[in-house]
Length: 375
Image 1: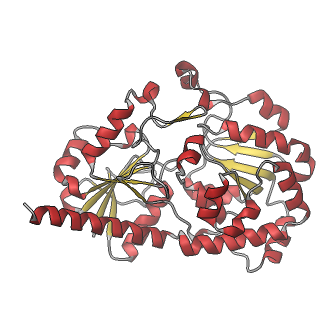
Image 2 (image 1 turned 90 degrees about the vertical axis):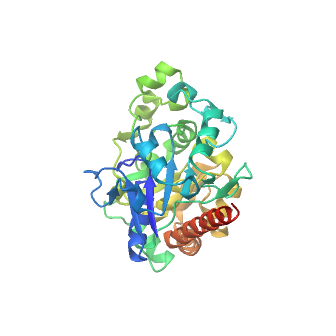
């Protein structure tokens, strides 16, 4: 099976990590997986191709409008790949009616100029097989497919026991200069991170400083001011007062190493994603880092994704109490981390994801064959 992936790819955002995993797995299993693109100098390990006819299926990975190729490349792709063999992964919940949660929303009319109905009709024009990375799609014509996964070989330090992990974490010999690190761009996350950082401020002497890594944490971007988008907030004075450092984004290959420099790392998502149950790469990749993940997610989502042991890693409303307890007795928290890693390796490995994707493609092929034979 030859699979063509269609999306905008760069090392600092979007699906660079899962795409690289799918490419590697495809190669190991005897499939060809490539990106619809000219060769990418920043991602030389990703095979690229514009030879549409050589591929059996095309998987569109869509976060925003510019993830679709420009003309005439898009026309060439649509003409060369029959609609029945195009699969569309809607990573941002666009294939729904307009939804607003706090300052967050799934249709960015003021930014990309597309109304909600345009997204729905556009997706349906591209494909009759719509996937979303959630276990509970709102629309009955959407297939759940989490897309992202956990990669055990990427775990920075695969401890044998919680006692070993707790001892190494407690005496990090200067390898953990930060108490908390969050890697992600400033888009619809300030409402969750600001109270978290404020809650940890009294613990700074024992915990260490916090750091935010990604775009637009150092100031509110001019484009957000121009369009009046409240979901790109940041209070620079507050960050300065709390001693929070900010730095530019790191490429996906450096995420685990960077996050491992902190004792804790929050797993937070946009309010819209929490509402829709959408999963992102951080949901799984954070468990590869040598850190204690703080699952700032809805309770039901924590248990459904991570298993019962992960309840220990959900601070709820008492962030300061969670951190204070973990600093005093880290072993129970590391027991939860190791148990959750086992659950993720069993239930959410990329091998399992690739098998799920193959099943989706096989079903699309059967549906295509049934339609053809009935004509």
